[in-house]
Image (cartoon, rainbow, N blue to C red; front, side):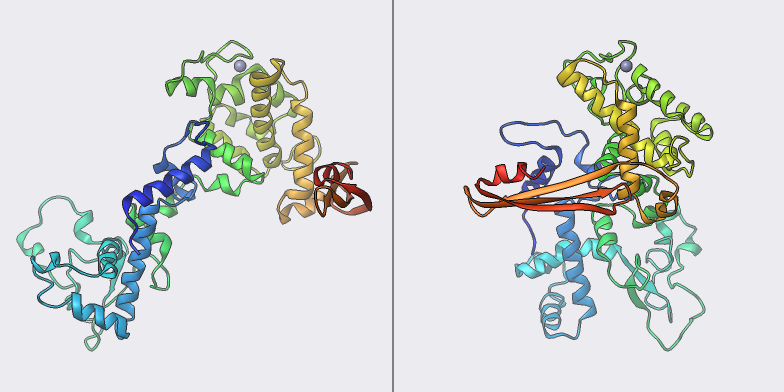
Length: 414
Ligand SMILES: [Zn+2]
């Protein structure tokens, strides 16, 4: 079904507002443009869809079904009615048609862009203009005029590979030749699906850390963290100088590497020697190298790529605490970073860490508790469990709380 542009824009606005936490009563700045956010993750976006292009993609899929199920009654009816000789003339294209055919016409361009010929007898394929090689139509990658003899090359090959069989169409951007929504979406928004393989941003989403820190690093990589300097550049009347050290503008680079607080953290953490050089590289490269390294953190034997994201995240939390609450520099950034890293490494990190977990000796326990009530107020109960740093069960408990509200029941077990 074809969505009106107005509907697509309204849906997109709702998604944008949700992403940046903007509501009717309290507008918040959108730190990255919608075009970037809706790029695939490999190309630096979040992989969200622009509704208009997503709609075109699904309509391209409808065209694919129409072609691949051409013997079906519905397909025969549509092609007989709308691909008749009369309809294919200049005037015929503007004749009234059903909603489903309007939808096919909107999905058509993305569908056609994704088709690739499989050469058999070569008679149906235009040598220059058709997509029959992995690099796309040959004419699109050759600049300037062609010699007349060259221009007259029409068939794909002078020697038929298979004289008996007609050339056939398949989807160019999938291994099995079948329609793929991801590549069709890229075609609908004017991108080349072949560029996905040469991306440089995938490391963010593979980093061994919490998704919210991955999102934070994504913002840093796009230089879109709401620091004083960046907010000032976007028109807010703010002093761009770092309010903690008063030495430089508060940029991402300053906040995470050059500020006194950051330097103090990295000094205390003892950055692995082989990564010291990265502290002079561009911020995005610095983040990538420190999140992809196999270096071990001296202090506890856990991996540096687990400690590092926690470090930059704690710097950001400490900065916000200073700005919005205490105006006092948090003295516990280093301790919090190690504590969070150890907890994540022991419980949240991926399976490959299991071998390394065995060498860590950390004596801490974790308590999870909860409670609920049948009504407000009504019969209530709760319980909890205690696990060690390897996630092993230590002790559990459960008890009735009598008649109380659900919020009290939530609080009591802890
Ligand atoms: Zn500073």
